[in-house]
Structure formats: C-alpha cells, structure tokens
Length: 194
Image (cartoon, rainbow, N blue to C red; front, side, top):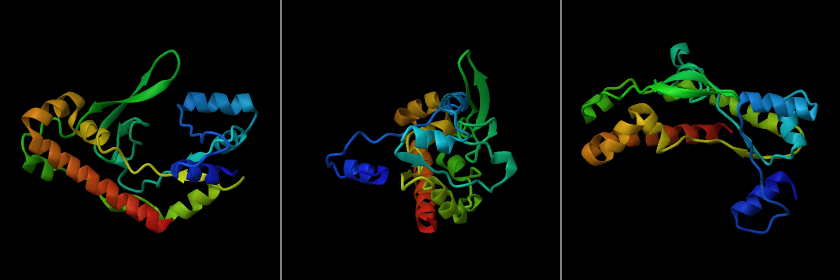
C-alpha cells in the first residue's frame, strides 16, 4: 500500500496496512533527525521514516512587515499578531506577544481592522511545491487552511476572547467570520492552483 493509498483508505474508514503517519517538529528536532538518519534534507528524513502525510504551505508574497510565519517566526505575521522567540533548555518556539484586536470595543473596530489580503500568497507555486513532495513516491498532501478557533484568539488574545464569548459575542462572531471567510477563500485558491 502506498502512502497515498493508506491515507485515502484511512479517510474512507477502510483497513490499512498500518496507521498513516504525520510529523511536524521544531527546527532543533528536525535538525537532530536529519543528523541521526544521516540524510541531507527534511524531505529525505521524512522519506527515511516513511512519513505518509506531507504538509505544504503556500508561499507568502505580502508585505515584509507582516511576513513572520504564524507561530513560527519572530515579528508580525500576516494577521498582524506579534510573535516573540522564546527558548528553553530543549528548543525554541514562538509565543504571541501582541494581539492586534486586543483593545477592540465594537464590531465596527473589527470591521475597520487592516485585514490581510488574499493576494499576499503565491498560489501559482503550489504545483511545484506538491511535485517536490512526490520525489520518492506519491505521498498524501495536507494543506492546513487555518484554525477557526485558534486564529481568532491569536488576534484578540485568549483571555479576552474567552471573556468575549459571554460578554461580547458580537465581537467574537465578527472576528470568527472574517477569519473563516479568509481561510475558506485561501483554501479554495490553493485547491484551484494545485
């Protein structure tokens, strides 16, 4: 059974030869895996481990000042959230330290926010990116469209978002609607381009 067949069978609730696998890890773990396996790239490490699902990302081509990867780079991400690099004895990670709509008082404040453009992504690059994942054999490709719960609280702040669920549900609905519409349209553009 190929990786792609395995993932499709699992999605269809049919018997597989083994449980499909996926892997995402910190840069330190990725580097350690590459060294341990004696390979040169993440792609080769995933092939050596027979990882079934391959995560792909549409390249960002928007403004530099909002180009940090969401929860994966220092600076401001495309939503306008500020991310700061944190370190412990094992690895580094990025924590959201600025929530752009933390002080929003109304739905109008949400509507007037500088929301990201759908044109900030290089959709035309997707076929090339997917083909790269098929170097060894056809793997199942996964594109994470976005988090319908996580992203709104990244933008608002977790505590304020949870309070708003009770005290300001209209603000929550406005933020969630903006995020959902954005992610849906971006996913459709990725599918179309792929």
